[in-house]
Length: 121
Length: 112
Image (cartoon, rainbow over all chains, first blue to last red; front, side, top):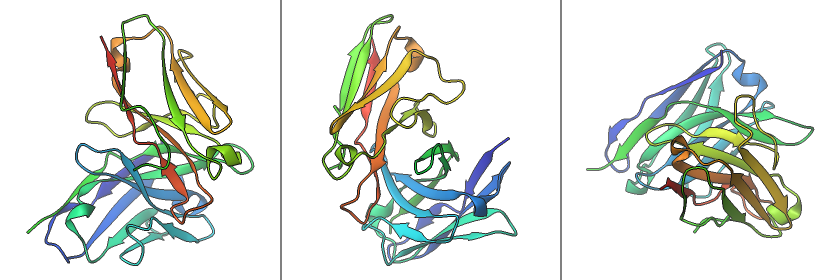
């Protein structure tokens, strides 16, 4: 059974750093595209970052230069290192697997339960 | 302001049919990129509802269907049920931005 379990969220002051983890089971993280999506309180979904199976990484403009997506193959875990945090980064952060459904298309087929990050002094 | 535009809310009575639109542009839906739909029940994580414009994952009732035409896509729900009350999001890919993956702003479905 595919499972994604996020951890690492919490209350952090502006300018601080936090690392989110997403432990996967039932599949191999390194063989898949993996993504982070966030949702500010009462707002919609916002794509944050993706890491491809080959290792390429991409970021939303709002987090570029501050966030880093990575994975630990030995732990089958996805990470999101968040630096220089701002109040507007306050959100529930979800990790999700992007699975291929044809030769070029990917959809987010499994999601974790999310972890809340609150940036406030 | 989301790259993909959805109506903020739609509503319908039990048993009725509702549709939710997702309007993009020539750099995303109009460029031929597929659209996916997600359902988010209150207090839960999003769930994949439709992928590749019109395909349902295993376990999704056939009351849910998707379509795409030009720069827009639609999600249709027939035989509306109380448990369908949720937020619905469309998602695609955009070639003009560094963001790559884009979501619609979301639509709140209320079952009257």
